[in-house]
Image 1 (cartoon, each protein chain N blue to C red):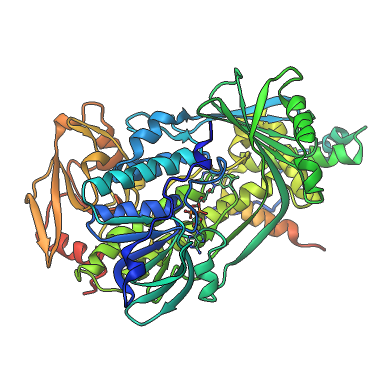
Image 2: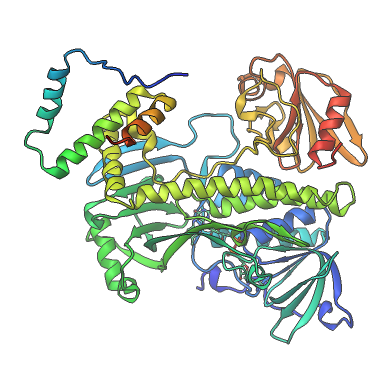
Length: 64
Length: 538
Ligand SMILES: Cc1cc2nc3c(=O)[nH]c(=O)nc-3n(C[C@H](O)[C@H](O)[C@H](O)COP(=O)(O)OP(=O)(O)OC[C@H]3O[C@@H](n4cnc5c(N)ncnc54)[C@H](O)[C@@H]3O)c2cc1C
C-alpha cells in the first residue's frame, strides 16, 4: 500500500514557499481561489494513486 | 397535418372482459404503454405468455421527451424485433463537444472501438420510438401472438390477493375488473399503482429548472452532442444542443430555481434565448417547450407480492446521461425471462428476488451517475463551482482533468457484481465479460453479429471448445453456439472473450449477460451454473 509522504520532502522549502506566494501576487481573492483549485487538480492528477489522495484528504481535514 | 403524438394509435375499443360475469384472469397484465410497458409486453409475447397492456391514454408520448437511446437498449430492441426501424429512423452520433464560456474545452468519442452492430447512441424522438414499438405489437398480433393493447383503460384500483391481483379499470364506457397472476406496473414516475399500494418513492430533488425547446429548423450543426457550461447566451447556467430526425433539434437551457414559469414559457422569451444562442437570423418552428425539474429516487423493493415495478415507476433519474428509458428497457430485459421460467414452473418464485437485486444495483448506479452529473452541471456550493470551473479551465489545455468533465455520463449497461445468479468465473479471460453477469459485448462472427446469434434463451457459447449441441437441466435448456478461428479474423473475440485463454465456454443468460465461464466444457459444472442462474439453490 502506498502511503502519503508527510515527511519533509521538498528541497529548498523556502524557495518553494516563496514561489507559491509569488504565484498569487496580484491576484484577487477569487483569482487566488481559482488558482488553488487548478493547482490541487494538477497535483492530484500527478499523484494519481487514490489511496494516497484519500490520505491527503484526511490529513488536510485535521486542524491544529 | 397532425403530429404522430396527436394521433390516437390504440383508441379505446370494448373488450369481452368488460362483459364477463366474473373478472377474467390473465397471466400478465401490464399497466402503462410507455416504452417500458410496451417493451415488457413484446418480450413476454415473444415468450408466448399472454399479456394485456392497459393505458389510460391512446397516443404515444406527448412531445419528444427522451431523445438518446444507447447501444445496449438498441441491442435489446433488436431482440424484441423493433431495433431496425428505430436505428433507420434515428440519427446516429458518437461525438460530443464541451464548451466553457466561449471556448471549446473538450471533445469525446463514445465508441472509439469497432466490431459492434449498433452505434453508441441514436437520437430519436420518444414518439417515434413508441410508435415503432406499437407497430411491433401490431405485427405480433398479426402473427397470432397473445398480446392485447387497450387504450382508454385506466387502472384505478389494485388489490393483492395472494396468488393473483385484481385490477379495477375505468373506461369511457364505465368500469370493469380483471385479474392477473402477475401485474407489471410501468405506469411512469408518478405511478398510480405504487401510490395505491402505499409504497414509498424517496430520493433527492434537485433545485433547478430546465427549459426544453424542441425546434424544427434547417441548421448546419454537425450530428454531435454539444454542451455549454456558462455560455455567454446563458450566463451562469448550462445549455445542450442535440439533433433529432426530421430537422428537429433538442435545445435544453438550464434556467435556475427561482423562475417565473409562465414568463419563461412565453414564445417571445424562448425566441430571445434561441436567437442569442443560434443567431439572430434563424428560422424555426417550436414543436415542444416544457419546463422540467428532476429528481433521483427509487423504490425500496421492485416487487411486492404479485406486483412488479419497472421503468420510471420503479426509479427516476435526471435526464443527464440518458438513463431513464435506457435503463427501463434493461429492467424488462432482466425481468421477462425470469417471469417466463416462474410461470412455466421451471424456476422458483424466489428468482424474482434476483430481479430486485440486479435492477436495484442498476438503478443505484444510474442514480449515482446522474446525481454526480447534476452536481457538476449545477454546483451546489462555492467550492464545488470553484473546482468545476478549474476542471473545465484545465481541460482546455491538459488531458489531466478531461475525464472529470461531467456533462452526463451516458448510459452503459451494468455488470451485476455479486448477483446470486452468478457462477464460476475465469481470471484468464477479460474483465469486461466477467461472469458477474456482465453484459455480452457484441462482436462480428462469420455468420453475423454475435448478439443476434444469442436470442432470448440460455446459450452455451463455445470458442475453440467442444460441448454438446444442447443441454437440459429439468426443463431449462442451454443451446450451443459454436465459434472457431474462422469467426474471429479481426481478433474481437479474443479481445472480448478469450483474453489469455486459448478456448472458452460461456454460459449466457437469456438477457445476454454472462452467467459463468470456463476454458473447457465440464458437464457437471455447466449444469450447476445453469441451476444457479435460474435461482434453484443447491
Ligand atoms: C425532458 C426529458 C428528457 C429525457 N431524455 C431521455 C433520454 O434521452 N434517454 C432516456 O433513456 N430517457 C430519457 N428520459 C426519460 C424517459 O422519458 C423515461 O424514462 C421513459 O419515458 C420512461 O418510460 P416508462 O414506460 O417507464 O414511463 P412513461 O413513459 O411515463 O409511461 C407511463 C405510461 O403509463 C400510463 N399510465 C399512467 N397511469 C396509468 C393508469 N392509472 N392506468 C393506465 N395507464 C397509466 C401513461 O399514460 C403512460 O403511457 C427523458 C425524460 C424527460 C422528461
